[in-house]
Structure formats: structure tokens, C-alpha cells
Image (cartoon, rainbow, N blue to C red; front, side, top):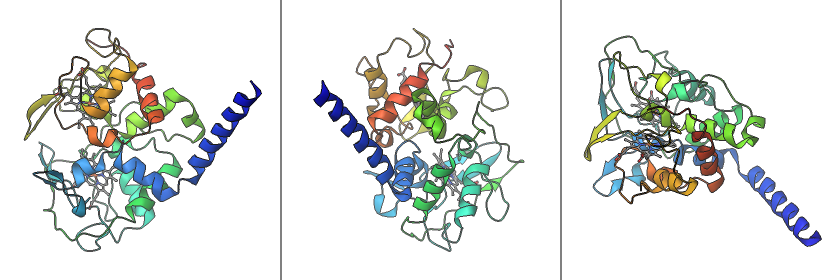
Length: 281
Ligand code: HEC
Ligand code: HEC
């Protein structure tokens, strides 16, 4: 009994030290390269997948919507073709408010309206990590804005969270899933093209790419239409490996490879929160 108790205390102490031992840059790297899936949109893709020696130097896709035409920007530290000249404060403002240092708003395909939840510590960590990204010179064609830029804030997305809240697994799951903008892809859009948050998680958005067309699925807690009847392990396998319970493979653009590098505790938290998403048909 006693020995077990001590072992548990020692394990807990190691975990706490582990969490503290993570430097801001390591934490920022974790957030950017796992749940944040930033490379999905900001790293060029070759025949073999992402071109990692040119990581973050500009994404492969072009988004052409009634509001804008934009490409994943070069977010390396190159000072001329990227954001190397931006200060930490300017970076944080761009990430959270969606506004560049020159005052020009960023097209909302860049999910800044989902980043308002980020704790101050994580905002600093992401900015600190971005400051370490190797400069790569690459002039990405400028965006065109066809109408005023309108951001859509998901439920709770504009309320900054605290470190203390992240000790609650469901709140931590909400935090990670919001920063990871799961619901940006998994919520249907209404006639105006804006997400219909009254149907949060019901799926139905179409994505075209080299994979053909994929349609986001219902990830609410609905027992038959959603994932309410799946086990935790089945939900995790879908997120990290793109495999459904019946063994079929999910198509892109969901960033399975990035999610696969999340800690199991973080995945468990995301699943715990998904189970609280109200069932929708
Ligand atoms: C769904 C795709 C997508 C994801 C995911 C994404 N971005 Fe972006 N991001 C874009 C696009 C597209 C632009 C350019 C928008 C424009 O030109 O108006 C952009 C612009 C930016 C800018 C402004 C660059 C500039 O020169 O103006 C920064 C900084 C940035 N992203 C950082 C990030 C970080 C950090 C992450 C992850 C935490 C991330 N992005 C995730 C698509 C994405
Ligand atoms: C860039 C868009 C995008 C993002 C971001 C995204 N997904 Fe998905 N997701 C999809 C699409 C599209 C599918 C369906 C693919 C298919 O059917 O081949 C899918 C499928 C799933 C499935 C399988 C459901 C089923 O019934 O098979 C789960 C579970 C899931 N996503 C959870 C998540 C979670 C949790 C997050 C955030 C951590 C997330 N997704 C982020 C686009 C996205």
C-alpha cells in the first residue's frame, strides 16, 4: 500500500516537473505541430507529403471564396517575404485578432477567431516558437479581398482561458478542440456561407482537393448519426490515424498526422469534451 502510494506521488511529481520542464518554445512547437495543424496550411506539399526543409514557407492550397482569394502565407522568420520583422506583440495580435501589423485583416480561412481561448502562456509560447522557425525566402502571391473581411467567432471562442481551467479534462478538451478548430470543418454552413453554430458538430461541409471530395461527418454525441456510441479508442483512432470503427479510411484534409503526435492525455481530454457536444441529426 505504502509503496504504491509513494510510487504514485513520485509519478505525479515527475509529471509536474515534466510540465514545468517544457520551455515556452517546446510548448509552442507542440501546439503548432500537433493540435494546431499550422503546417497543413503553411508548409508546401510535394509528391511525398509536406516539404519539411521548407516548413512554414507557404502552403500548397489556394482558397477562392466570395470574400477573398488567399494562400497559406510564408510564416517563417524571413524578414522580406515572411514575418521575420514582426515583434512578439505583433504576432500575438495577428494570431488572436486576425490583424497584421500594417492593420490589414487576415482572411478568416486562417482560424484566428478560434484562437481567443488561448491562455496568455500559450499565446507567448506560440509566438516564441514562431520566432525560432528557420527563415525561408519564398514570395507567396498576395491575397485579394473582394468584400469586407468578416470573422465568425465559435461558441466560447473569444473568451481567453486560464491555466487553472486546463486542469479540468472537459475544459481542457474544449480548449484544445477550439484551438484545433475542429468545429470550423465539422459545422455546416448556412446560406450566407457562415458556420451555423446552432448545428455545432453536425458535419456536412465539403472539401475538394487532390483526394477528390470529402464531406465532414457528424461528430456530435448523437448515438447513431454521430459518434456517441463509439468507444474512446475508436474516436482516438479516427482522429490520429483516420480510421473508422469499420476499418475504412478517412480522406483529408483533416490533419491526422499532426494529431498523432498529441499526448494521450490531450487526446483523452478532446474525447471527453466531444462527448458533451449536444446530439444533432
Ligand atoms: C486552414 C488553414 C490554416 C491554418 C490551420 C492556419 N493558417 Fe495561418 N493562414 C492561412 C492563410 C490562408 C493565411 C493568409 C491569409 C491572407 O492572406 O489573408 C494565413 C495567415 C497567417 C499569418 C499572417 C501572415 C502574413 O504574412 O500576413 C500568420 C502569422 C499565420 N497564418 C500563422 C498561423 C499559425 C501559427 C497557425 C497555427 C496555430 C496557422 N496559421 C494555422 C491559413 C491557415
Ligand atoms: C480541415 C477540416 C477538418 C478539421 C480541422 C477536422 N476535421 Fe474531422 N473530419 C473532416 C472530414 C472532411 C472528415 C470526413 C472524411 C471522410 O469521410 O473521408 C472528418 C472526419 C472526422 C471523424 C470521423 C467521423 C466518422 O463518422 O467517421 C472524427 C471523429 C473527426 N473528424 C474528429 C475531428 C476532431 C476531434 C477534430 C479536431 C481535433 C477534427 N475532426 C478536425 C475534416 C476536418
